[in-house]
Image 1 (cartoon, helix red, strand yellow):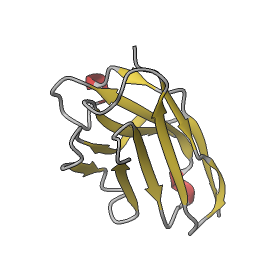
Image 2 (spheres, rainbow, N blue to C red):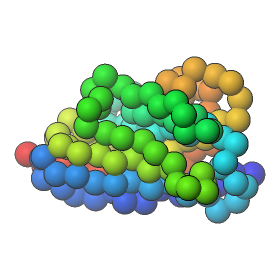
Image 3 (cartoon, rainbow, N blue to C red):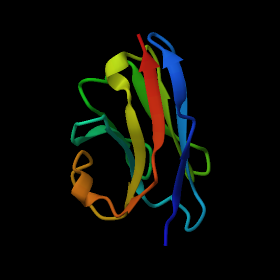
Image 4 (cartoon, helix red, strand yellow):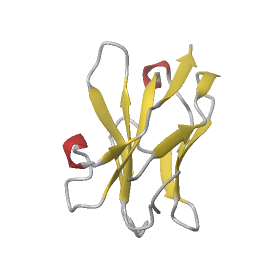
Length: 124
């Protein structure tokens, strides 16, 4: 079983930065593709960014390209989301997800494990 734990959320002013982390308390994540999704109040869950198990491939939603960066720790057991130039519309609960299967990295249904989420609030 893979248990994912997110951290790093908080309250920040527009234009500020936050770094989210996702770590496992169980099986190693080194062979899992990872992703971040988010759900804003009253909206559907949406894809934010994804990274392959090897870290060679990354994917981003158009709304965060050039502002967010996904990466893996050297041991590949931690995944980070560096968020710069944050906007009020980035306010959401951010979820970390892991998958072992081949699937579209932007599709939530392809992911096998999910964290509990961490709140990010961007004030204007």
